[in-house]
Image (cartoon, rainbow, N blue to C red; front, side, top):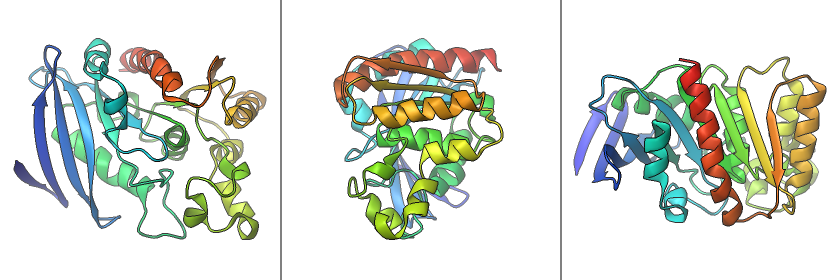
Length: 273
């Protein structure tokens, strides 16, 4: 184990050689000043001896998961990193944080962590394109919400965002997934709940520069919210890709969709650099 100090970051890195040629995995643990805790991620990266930088895809998990979720569910992430020539960062949400800064629980500031701590570290430790056209973010369920929420609020950081079965309007699920502990009881904080949803935020923006790719299962309990987001974006003339597919809210759904989203993100990132 090697401990490095990088600015205000303390980082512990564990390196594992991947199964695919010139692909490696690092488990990094970063001290988050905003959350006052160490937070871990897995970084899957192509050969860093190359003179060419790589684009970065930030991959977010859903409620009840952790930074190991995608790696636990899929055994081909190394191949996907290699094929798409991207660095993949498997982000931890610190429980069911929904990837925003909670106005109630000030010990959960995940928007600040991702945008101001994790991204700068990845760009300093790996050979990346340090610009929006070099970064994509995507996720499932809670992570789908997080990917769109972070990308729309930080268009200076992300050029592409994808959601798979995303909880883009959680305001109709008033007692689920620890959201009351983040935003307060719904009955007393209805406006706050709406303000933190992707759908509400998308409706307030004059323009969106981020490339958006959204999908949802036809039997998913989040389908209504995703259809509504599609309608909001369409009515505002905002370009996006939206598809529904057979399936419910399950690992079999989003693990089938991830390769498609990664390929689309990689294609756009390469064409934009």
